[in-house]
Length: 307
Image 1 (spheres, rainbow, N blue to C red):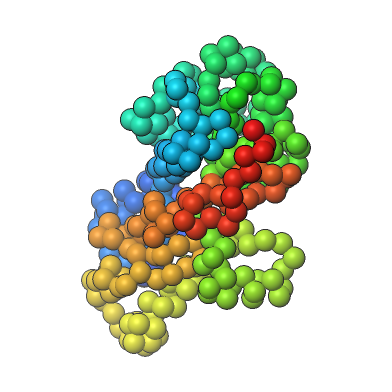
Image 2: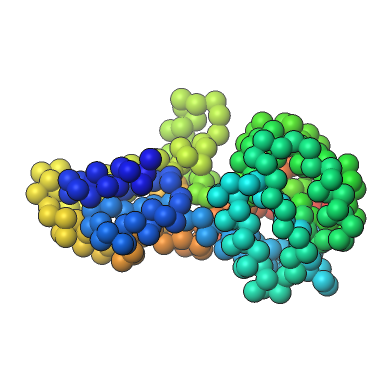
């Protein structure tokens, strides 16, 4: 959908700030077609790889749970979608550069819920970490539950995205305790509090601020700030595409609920550190997500008693 909408924006010289779409194909289209009016906030798929490499390095340094490992062996599982396979391959490459040995890479159907044969084979490989990427809540919950049944010795379970869904954690039950999961972008409690968004949200909602909600709220902040600093609505409307491009690229970073948003010459907001837009890592504790990494902005400490 985004790939289609950017064409309309570009053809009609309409300013567009994309909030949640992550695909790197969007970035490529913006650059290849010199789309002056189109900018992208959410980090691309590669941010997941960067997050896992950096988080695992941090866990090694701080000796979290069973870390550090002497052999640094990881087994990887991905749903057989372009998203799953791309994230797995990018993460594998990043970890290998950081000294890890990828002992296996398995692709499983998106709707799969029985992983016993895959886990049985993986257990025989003696991995230090079993890592998976899935978007299906049923599949994610089932994989965690079955991983626990195999009683891997001193092995960490890590999951990209899937366990951020409450339905997946409910399906997994106590088996999910101690698992780590990463998502981007998502709300940073410290920033949400500083901006007054958390209190405003709590007045009208019983649930937590989701990642998509925090991203959309951040985008509204970005757009309103850029329009205001352009001189107001009328001055903004009179801007040429090149003036708008220069205005956005040269603007100071704008604090949002997902991080500090600063667009580069490639029209992508900077990402990958606590000072920009970080990916967030959570530890599952009793069915809840505790935000534990990046350590600089984390809202909770890792519960090492679960290992």
